Each structure stands twice: as structure tokens, then as C-alpha cells.
Amino acid sequence: GALSEIGDVDDFETWRGIQLNDSNDLVEIHWAYFDIGGSVALEWLPPTVESVALNNNFLIGSLDLSLLQSPLWHFDVSYNVFRGEIRLDRLPKSLRVLNVSKNKLDGSIDLEHLPAGLEALHLNGNSFEGIVCLNNLPEELVGLDLSENFFCGELDLTSLPPNIRHVHLYENSFSGVTDFSQLPPSLENFDISSTLVEGEATVKDDQDFTFPLAVTVNRN
Figure 1 (cartoon, rainbow, N blue to C red):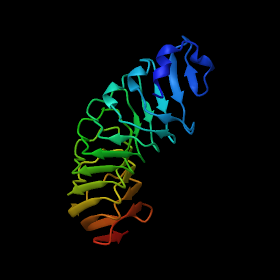
Figure 2: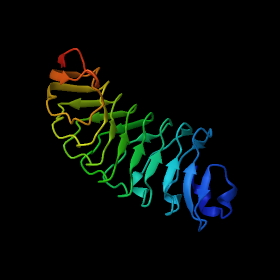
Figure 3: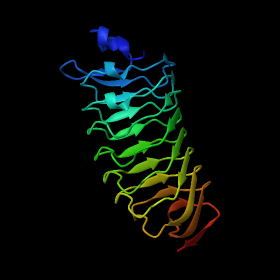
């Protein structure tokens, strides 16, 4: 696997994309655009690692995110070929950024048991399905991208986090009359186009909001 050799090598301070702290503990693995293939053995991640970027490679296999542990705050495996289901209810409390976008992941998603300090969640460009609950998202969440999946059902947008700025829900099968009256003032970028939702929304001219045709948009 792409990480299994770490457990056998002591002299990794010479490796490209590796960063150590003053105690020679491994704290960062940044192997983006490295043309790496094969699977990833997350159980080999040293417990000192704070940031992992394996994006834009050719990595395959499944992702057992329950193997991630504190003090990890940043985990990016976007633009790979990971398959199968993932669980988001056992992520480390330290996690701030999770990006698994543009893979082949599927199954349903639990958004009600995320780490309290999570700031950005990117699930876009996969094959996730089922309904999603947006009522118990982390208070610190700033960016949420669920676009380009197969999510369905009605959406409750009345309890989004108070400081959220970016919400992308486009290209899903969400449906039903949706209440847009309580979107938080912090929201700067909101895209729910290419869905089946209906309703009425009032938008300020400086807000970058995109709706499907079935939503009546009033601008002021």
C-alpha cells in the first residue's frame, strides 16, 4: 500500500513530500500529483501525523476513515479511484478538513455525527445516495460540498451552521418544496441547481446563489 512502507523506514526525513517536527516525528505527508497507484494502508499512519494530502493520484481500494486519529486535522484524498462506502461518525475530533471528492465512493452518508470542529467537508463527485440531514452540522463548518452525487429526498435548510459560507448541492436528485427563508447571512456561495427542489427565495444582488428553474427567485 501507499503508506505501508512508512512503518518499516526510519530514515524518511529524506523523502519528498514529508515533513518532520523538531522531535523528528512525522507530521505531514504531501504526496499530491505523485502518480502513485495501489491501495492506502491508513493503519500505518504514524499517530503524530497532522496533515495528509494524497490527492490527484491513482489510488484504489477502500477508505476506512475510522483508522484516522488525532492530531490529524487535514485529510485530502480527492481525485483518486477509491471505492465503497465510508463512515463519517468515527472521525478524529481534531479533524478540520476532509476532502474525498472525485472518487468512486458510494452508499449513504451520516452528517449528524461529524467532529465538532470540522470546517470543510467535500464529498462531491462520487456516487453517494440516499437522504441527508443538514440539521446537526458542526457549528464551525464553513464549506459543504455534496454536489454531483445521487442524494435524494427533501432538504431542510433552516438550521445550517451560523458561519457557513459555501454550500454546493447541485446535480443531485433532491426534491420537494424547500424553505429558503432561513439561510444564514454568512452564506456567500450557494448552488442547488440541477436538482428537483421547488420554492421561493429572496436573494441579495451581491450573493452568488444559483437555483433550479422551479424555484422563484426574488432579488433585492
